[in-house]
Length: 345
Image 1 (tube, rainbow, N blue to C red):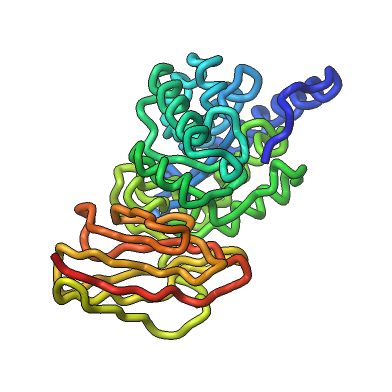
Image 2 (image 1 turned 60 degrees about the vertical axis):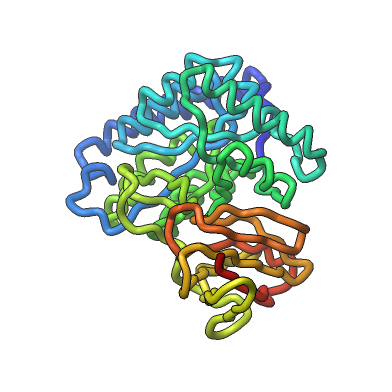
């Protein structure tokens, strides 16, 4: 979800003009409340910007975010982190959190495991070498994922982060449309934006105003849950309320090497995917096996150590985060809940 970086002289002049207007507009709003200065935070949201860094766009983005009291997660491409290490350091100095967005932004689900590993590992190194720390979050290019990619993410200790709301800024969305997309954010949710669209830059002052008016604050994305939480890692984690996912009540599994029960409950649902929450009782040393009905796929998990014996099976073990965990399933036209079984060791 990006366009080529090469701009015509006319487009560049237009972009700079809009950027200048955005900075000027910022001054209009500095007297108002911003999310970081809200009296109380009724929730936290994850503002994310993909495809950086660059000398052309990163400085203006960071300036606009700082002037409007916002912090965000930036998902950097390794090739650009390597080319513009000073901008990675500028992101950190501005209070942003830096994530991994692959090295060259390919369709990773079409790549071999070795190619995926290279894309992920080289970006980890590029960001770290540039002073951005070792990323803990990974955003798959185009939001495309599969079990092979997730295995590589797990190898490098990365939490996969998709999004709840797509601003469509990559698709030519207007300033009003980008502001409206941010206005739909609820506690714990994450929005997809990019650092290069001029309209996104121009929308930032109004995004800040809108969040503040609803008592929402910027949040960090928790490496444990993949949801937006308070910047210190505390607070509530959204994504556990909202639509049902093709069933009522929970699904309980038991048996195996000991006594424990895994119970499913509905989480948030979107047009293309849904969350399930899992509560394990009876043991704190458990293994839960999830059999996912085809053509559904596991997109991401939280609060567990996950392995994938096959494309349709997830094996979950505790990772020290307790007995409540969850997963995001890609529907692919189906909303049949998976079956689960639990064994204690």
